[in-house]
Length: 129
Image (cartoon, rainbow, N blue to C red; front, side):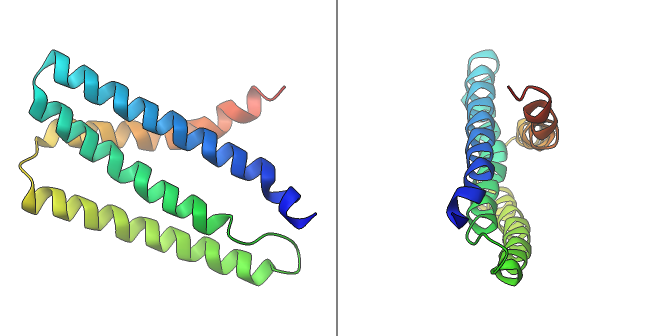
C-alpha cells in the first residue's frame, strides 16, 4: 500500500527524465548537424549533466514513502537536493577543466533542460486526463 502511494510520483519523475533526455539528444543532434560535432558534444555534456543529477535526485526523493517514514522521506529528499547540486557542480567542473567544450551550447542546453524541469510539472498537471 505504501509503495502504491509513491507510484504516481515515480511515474511523473520517469516521464520528466525521458522528456529531458529526449530534448538533450535532439538539441545535441541538431547542434552537430547545424554547426559541428564539438557543439553537439558540448550540448550533450551540458544537458546530460542536469539529467544525470536529476535522475539521482529522483532516486533519492522516492527512496522512502508513507506517513511512518516521514522523517526518512524528508531526509532523503534534502539529501537528494544536496547530491544534485554537488553532481552538477562536479560535472561542470570536470567539463570545464578536462574537456575541450564550447561554452555557448553547453550552457544553452543546460538552461533548456532547467526550463523543462520548471515547466513540465505545470504541463503534466494541466493535461491530466
